[in-house]
Length: 475
Image (cartoon, rainbow, N blue to C red; front, side, top):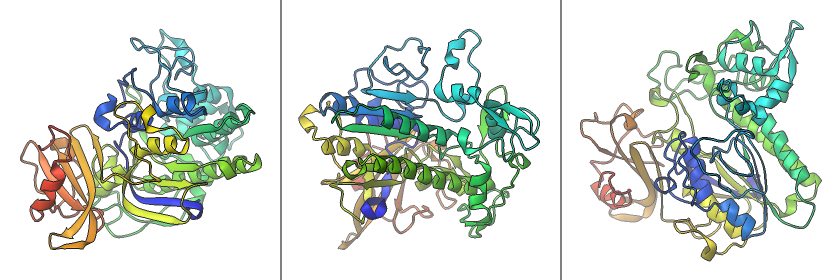
């Protein structure tokens, strides 16, 4: 796909957390404007207009979504749980013509509240409950029991092995199959279509099937930078993946049964995360093959993007939600008709502008956009800077000259404004956080792992970027 389209090597998420990032994409608005500042509660503003609604009602598109979209639960046509309404939330129309929505890897393991068994009616959970898998010893168990055993190390003794957790019940494969279902059942008229496929992975728990494990076994993977943990290989020393054929040989994650709080994996997590990425690539290919089989690929633009990255041990951190590159940098590829072929764009862009790109491709004029929506298309003139934020930090990235005396050579500077725990995972060279707010400046190109803050040596850059931060953040 890269050869038939444009790759963006410095793409940023508007917020490196699931629901906030998806809310930005759906609304075309910056993080502060959506109202969705954390995953739960999802304080989506019912008055927001979505790009899906504009595509459907103005552009005339048949709009579809499937998988873990992390959007507002109470869509009156396609609620998150088919027979369960979230309390005190109004019904709204997100703008979909058809949808198969589901929850994520973790919540599907939770049993519904005793007072409301109807919450059980969620597509992937229902699917797992309807399936039976066979373990290596010949015993048959519920697919949901096998899923929980593999994801948590809990459940029936030996419930997770090489045969009890096949691709046929893997969460990403389930979403791929639902995407193909949506394509097959869409109207046969000449109406154009839009579909958003929301894979649960790559995402913790980073647990893989036996065949996925074999695909990365004994392959060298780069180690974390400044791991600060003895479980990792020394910094700079490549790691070899040593997954076992029998998945139950290692507990990839641990769970507090009372709180269902997952602890991130350590060394094997980096290998498995790579296996998950490659598996998503294979699943995307099968969706493209479906479009080829129907002859629709020639007139279809395909976008591959992420909502956030993952800190897999760099600077002793795991997870997401912090301002370092592993968290805020995401993949982005656009391929298809009207897209420049075999191009690489190395400057900073934001996935927030995918909304403007989709509407541009659909011929929806900016005059139809809701107030506050981005009108920038990634296929046209790009914005001058990009922003991202979560919790008590905000950042801005902009291409600027590397020296006040030389405007010919440019780089991307990232200015971070953070407070206390929001600065966690800072490289060891970062000054101690003794002030309520801290300004950090990095050369993204020359120092991608952010080892040295330039805030003191380049006050001119700090001053130029600081005015681009939201009010109340270091200004």
